[in-house]
Length: 265
Length: 226
Image (cartoon, rainbow over all chains, first blue to last red; front, side):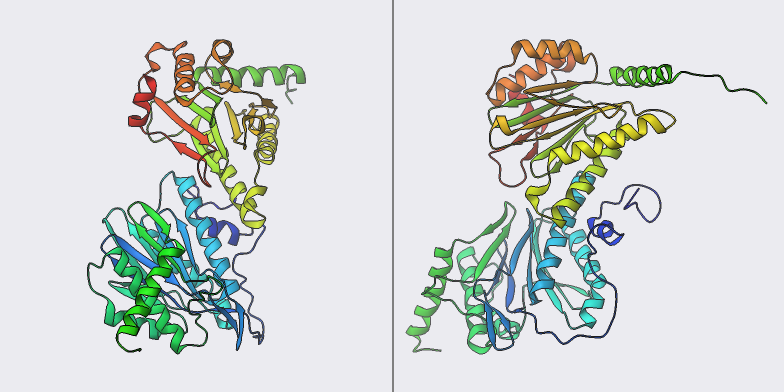
C-alpha cells in the first residue's frame, strides 16, 4: 500500500512522505537544472517572544518584489494546529506552500495515529521538511520559518528557529527572522524581560516590528489609513488566538505615545 | 490429474456472503443518528485505544464494525485519500460521496478477488449545513452502498436494533435525547452496555469551526447517559 513505513511494517503517519512517494502532487521537486534568475515576492520580518502564558508571534504585512511593494496585506504567521504556529520569511510562494504542507502533515499524523505529535516532534518534522527543500534553496528560493508552540507536556511556550538547510535551534527568549530581523531583534533585546505580561509582550512585538520597518525598506510599518496592522498571535495552553486588530492598534499607539514623551526616537 | 470440483458462481458468492455476514454479526454494534446539531455516533467498544469511530476530514467521519484490522486499514486509506484531495484541490472538494465510492470499489475488489471477504461494514458520514444536507453512506462487505436517511445501525443484530431505533427516532433530537436513544438501542442486545467505559461516542457537530469531529471523553458521556 502507498506510503507504508520504510521498514515495511505499519502505516506511515506522514503526509509529506505520502506526497513525495508519488502522490498527485510532488511536494518538493528534486530536479536540479540551471538556476533561473527570478525575482519572486519576498516576505520580510517575523518574530516570536516568550511571555508568562506562552509565546507571542508576530509579523509585518509587506511583501516585496525588488523595490516594489508586492502586497500590503500579506499574512506571514499561520496557526499550524491547535497549539503551534509558523511564521515565515523568504520567498512567499515557497513559504506558503511549506506551511500548507506542514499543516496537513500535522493533521494527517493526528488522524492516522489518533493523537497529536509532541511539540518536539513537530519541530523536528519541520526541520526534516526543510532539508528536503534543499534543491529549491540551491536555486535561490530560500524559506526560513520560525516555529513556536505551547508544549503541553512541559507546560510552557517554546520557540524554534531554523536555518535554510534545516538546522533547528531552540531559542529561550525571543527571535526574529527576515530582512528586518536584525533590527527587530535589537529592539527586543532592549525591551525583553522574563515573565512579561500578555499586554507588554504584544507591545514589545509591535515595537520590534516598528523598529524594523524604520530601518528596513522591505518591512511594512503600521498603515492606520488603510487599517493595516501587524498580525499578532498568542500561543497558550488554551490554543492559538489572533490578537484583535484594535488591541494591536492600541499597542502601537502606546509605543508612539511613549516615543513622543521622550521627544522622538 | 485431479479435476477441481465445479462450484457454481451463485454458490460461491453465497458462501462468501454468509461467511462475511456471520463475522459481522459476531461483532459489537455501532449506531449513528442525526440530531439537532449534526450526527451522533455511538459504539459498543470496550477498548479505549482501538477506535471504531474516527475523523476522516473536516466534515467527514468514519465508523466501522467487524474485524478491526480490516476496517482500520480502510480508515487510514480514507484519511490519505481525503488529505491528498484537500491538499491538491481545496478543502470543500473532499466529499463523503467520493470516499464512499472509493471504499465501495475497494470492498468489491476484495470480495470477488481475495481469498476471503472482509468481515466488516463501514459508515462514511458527512455533516451538512442542515440535516437535509447531511449524508450517511453505509457500505457493506461486498461493496454495495446505501445512502441512508436519519440513522444507521451496523453490526450485531443490526436489523432488530434498527427496528428498535426506528420506533424512538424523530428529527431534531437534542444531543442528550439522541444519546439516550442510541444507548437504549445498543442495550437491547446487551443490557450492560450503558456504562461510560463501554460506550465510545463522537459527533460531527456543525456548530464547531473547521474540524467538526469531536470524540467524547468518559466524563462527558456519563452525564449524557442520565
